[in-house]
Image (cartoon, rainbow, N blue to C red; front, top):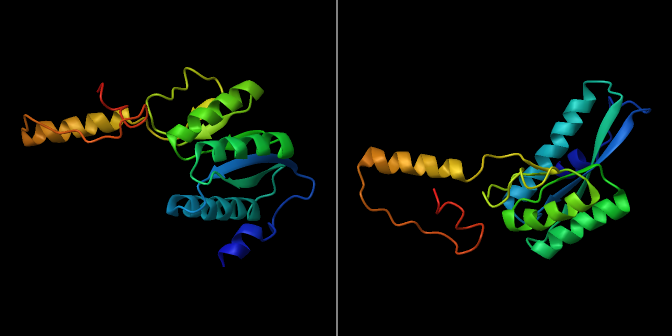
Length: 169
């Protein structure tokens, strides 16, 4: 069923519609990657089945292989061989950092759910964050600490630019 959703022709599509090619970089072996691909395919199929639009988004999925270089390679492939107008993803902040630099150089928007405060839309006019920044999580954690009246809290984090992004908050 999932395969038919991903490759089924869109019954309500306009044959003369201008196609907007969009790259999608996912970690295909992860649950989030699989769900995202299925949901995006289903949403587009449902959207275009019920309406006759003059433009149509055509997703081009690529696997990052859960790797920074894999994500960058996928972005370069999408930009060079498919000539996408935008890229959705990658999922992880460390991957997005590299892909955002590539998007800046070729002036293609990168829309990512990467949440690290180290990645800022202010630093790149072509980066669009589609999720709340991790610093908002710090506010929620602080509210919990305050509500319980705790005086000491141990913060466990990954010692990287992306894992330690909450420390200043």
